[in-house]
Amino acid sequence: MADTSLDISGLCPPPFAAVREAFAANFAAGKELGARFTAQIAGETVVDLWGGHAGRPGTRAFDDETLTPIFSTGKAVMALMIARLVDQGKLDYEATVANYWPEFGQNGKAGITLGQLISHQGGLSGFSPPQDPSIWFDVPATLKALCEQAPLWTPGEGSGYHPIAGGYLLGEVFRRADGRSLGTALREDIAAPFGIEVMIGTPDVYEPRIAHLQKPSAPPDLGPIDAIKRAAFLDKGSAPAGKGSADWRRMEIPSANAHATSLGLARLMSVVANGGVLDGRSLISPETLSQAMRERVYGQDRVLPYRLSWGAGFLRNKGIAIYGPNPNAVGHSGWGGSCALADPERKVSAAYVMNKQSHWLIGDPRPVSLIDAFYGCL
Image (cartoon, rainbow, N blue to C red; front, side, top):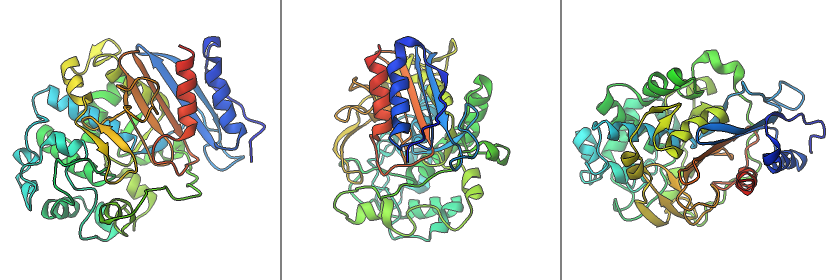
């Protein structure tokens, strides 16, 4: 049922009125519970709208303090953090993962490069054989199992989306190269110094601010099911289970359990949109960003039912047009509908978060309508 008493708050000057209209229309159609959309141009916030409920209808408001789980949208954050280590010379996209982590090279994986792993070409979309879902809460056991297993397809021969396992693997590569966990480095190097509310591993003190999720009413359409898709999404152990949501929230799973505001995400993605600069400070060189954003593989993904173009952890807009009109824009989407994008040609960054999840794997019509309305105003 549509919420006819919606109070929309935030920033939306008259030139961007169409964005507010699209935001209100999503609520009027009953598609939202609570949501927020933020867009920046050249690092300046030009639209920042929020409304609805952070809990069940009639409970606390969804406001500018609300944090939401963003699931795989956090992969864009992970991609940026990995790129920073490449920029610092601690990692190289063309080096093998085993160069940094010898144990990874077992069972046919010795030649997998960092660039292949981060662009979903490593053949490790899930466990094979299946594992108990509680294994994800035991990081050493998870890494050991993934190191020991063989790839599900020949590495480098096309992409197959790594929903959760990729974050554990890339998180370990990050830790070995940097000495800190990816979530710790995010907090110490970017989030705390710049006042950006994006967290991978969320302390208990933030729990009262986290939105209550309304799960999708229908499962996603994965297309024809095979062993690769089962390992990624459908096997019993394809996702963490067996512990409470607080345990999951505290974990650092760079691919799956980030929490953020849309303003925090838009500001972080402005680094990509503005040549590596945030608030006048250079965080990464334009040359490394170019490496991170360039196409590394394009074609029918083995897990997601789309033809996709992958950069080094960024989903490229080529062929899908869900992050505005520029095919060279990059971003990522998360389970239920969240997304974040960066468009260096227009110096645009934007993000959408919500707590009423949909069944769309990517390209949820709610953020697409907001992003398209925003570009229509430029």
